[in-house]
Picture (cartoon, rainbow, N blue to C red):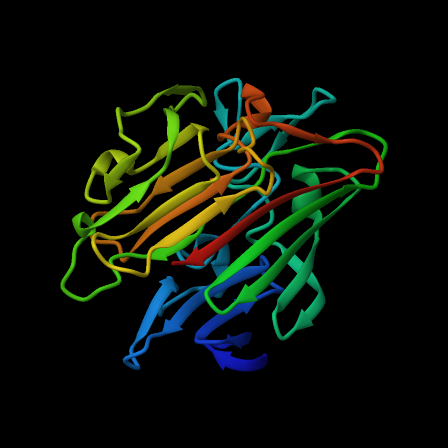
Length: 306
């Protein structure tokens, strides 16, 4: 583990086996890049990071793994976007994907295998989510993978609502001369949903468990009713596929989802996002979780190469 200067910032870099991880724990607890040195000496980018990132607007940077907390996606209050109605009946603002991806964090562990960082809410964050709590992001890096655990501790008197998640930007395609149609993803789901402009969850596209990334219907698709913890994707007929695992229980959490998204046909990434529940959880109540006074609740994911 070492500190390096990159893109005008002081970042932390880990070398674990043939994998290199780059992160800015103090800003959004942001994992920025993961690359792997292959046997022939070439380097494969697993998690994408753009060369021209604007750290002044880090929430808008399309790369790495933005942390989505306390709620995923867009919140609505009676049709009005970027608001939510708290349990006390008060209407409050809530930015896209919450308050953590642009937030300040205090690093409490930094070692050869990763870091722990605690969210330090500013005035804007407290206006959105005015509770007494501790939210910790803990990364552990492995030679061919990583794990990330969220911990939310309720330090106040009222139950805390949350429905958090991850927004991994995976490099795709990763082999020169290939296209998205050369890569497939398998998500064993029993329902596919969309999030419509009013905030409602509506019927999504008809998809099979296995689809190629060339299928435009994957974009902005919410995969629910999961029959497996894992989304697996890779290049047809070759090794090096990626497994994203959601949760640690014997069966998938009943309201957990994977979301698949990309910006454009030519974008050098495709996002596979494990979430605790669908977007707009405070209003729909689907996938909304609660942390009682004095309790700590956790949400864990892992990403591994096969």
